[in-house]
Length: 164
Picture 1 (spheres, rainbow, N blue to C red):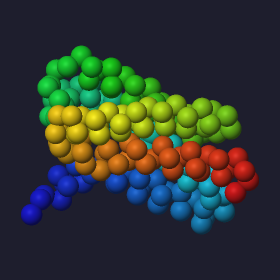
Picture 2: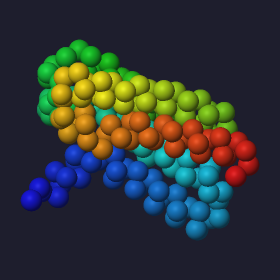
Picture 3: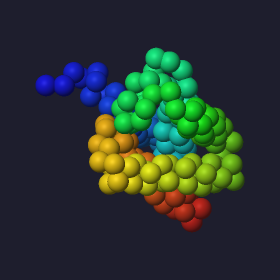
Picture 4: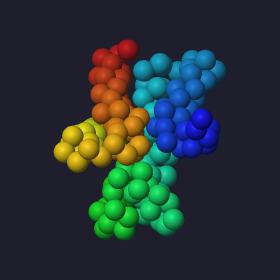
């Protein structure tokens, strides 16, 4: 049986998403804020913002960078890992700012983060098919979130703009 901490670590995207939904639900119940905008804002804060900053740090600094590379099926020490770290951290900052600024800043953050995540997801799928890289961060829940979270964010954005 896997260790609970290891399982949570391997499926961190699910944990962050659950946290975002719980925070959104609490805000909706306590303050009566609009459902669609609130859920989207919390996804941006937690999944794009906090998770992005943590991913940036994890990809950049040792010893976590080596562990992350191995869980992705990458060779540790690749300079590309620092470029991924920079992109993750940049979108992390945007996700946090979008939570507070909202309006068109939220729109731009959703579009940019969606493009980045979806293309990362495609990259994982291609790596899985071409190289049979079934490492936990290349073929696990991370890849599903890279592909599905952008779709969800775009749907919520359109619904919010339509007045839902």
